[in-house]
Image 1 (cartoon, helix red, strand yellow):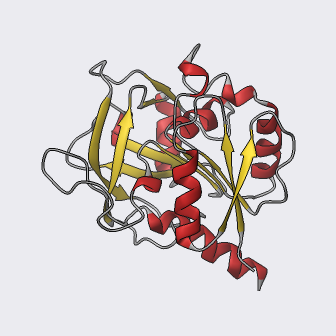
Image 2 (cartoon, rainbow, N blue to C red):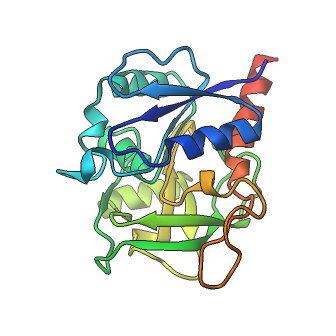
Image 3 (cartoon, helix red, strand yellow):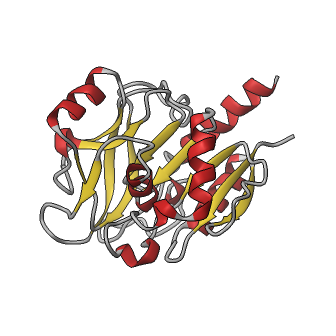
Amino acid sequence: MSPRIGVITFPGSLDDRDAQRAIRIAGAEAVALWHQDHDLQGVDAIVLPGGFSYGDYLRAGAIASHAPIMAEVVDAANRGVPVLGICNGFQMLAEARLIEGAHTRNEHQQFIRRDQKLSVETTATAWTSGFEAGQEITIPLKNADGRFVAAQEVIDRLEGEGQVVFRYVEVNPNGSMNDIAGVSNARGNVVGLMPHPEHAVEPGFGPDTRAAMKSGTDGLVFFTSVIEGLLARAR
C-alpha cells in the first residue's frame, strides 16, 4: 500500500497542486488537507507548500503558523512524522518554531526567480536520504522573503549539529547567512528549504532556454526519499 502524504492548502497557497502532483509522480497518494481543519486524515507525511499565505501580511508564514491544522502538524512533527516546508512552508515552520531561524526580505529587496544550484549538505533526514552528501542539484527558486537569518549562536549550532541541509552554490540569491538554503530540526524528520523541489520532478517540463527557468528531476528525490523511508518503516 502506498504511503499517504498530506498537502495543506492555506489562503494564498500557490503550489499545493504542484506538490500533490509531485507526490503522485513519486509513487505515493497525495491527500489534500485544509488549513481550518484539525484532521490530518492519518497521513504518513506532510508538505507545507509554497505561495503567499494570507498575503504575507505581518510576516511571511506568521499568520498561517497559527492556523488550526498547524497544532496537529506540530504534534505530528514532535512524534516523528516527516514534514517538508517549501518556501512559504519553510517560513511557516520557522514561525511555528519547528525549525530554528527566521526569514527576512531578500537582501537586494527584490523578488527573485531562477534555477538555483544547491549543495546537499546532509542525507540524514527523512527527505534527503536518496541524495549523496555533497551532491549538487538544481532546483527552481522564487521568493521575496527568502533571506535566512538567526543569531550567530543558532547558526553555529545548526552548522555544528549537521542541521544545515542545503546550501546555495555559485550565487547566494537572497543574502541568507552562511549561504543556507534549507535546514532541519535535530531529529531530521522536519526539513524546510526555500527552493521548490515540486517544480523539478519531470524531465522536459517547462522551457529549456537561457531566458527562462527549466525543470529537471532533482526535486523528485525529495519525495522518493520520504516514500522509501516510510515503506522501510512499515516492513
